[in-house]
Image (cartoon, rainbow, N blue to C red; front, side, top):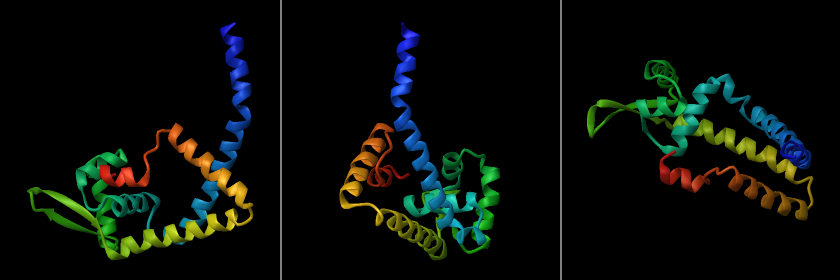
Length: 162
């Protein structure tokens, strides 16, 4: 009986799962289109670092590498390229002279802001084709999904330094 109830639960979840997968593809398409101009200047991993730095502020090289799931030596090549391109700057940690901090430059912050603005425009273009009631329902649904996924809010990420 347990296997049969699992199957019916899967069938019950199928429409929501399929709709969410389809919506995630639509969002990924918007993300990709918003990033195309940036990828002429930086790689995707470099852009990811700039996004982290723009939201969290300057971070130790070791902490950045850990957040990205790479070794410090692997990450240092990415940092070198960002610094050489003027997207980031290295700073000495005043509290520990052995630590190096990577900070976004104004140019790096501008790139992230540009991509974010472009992404907002693309999303707004889609939202304009929806009725106000549909948009309200979407907001409620996305908040519920975010809560269920235990995804922290932007404000919480900033407090946590993420």
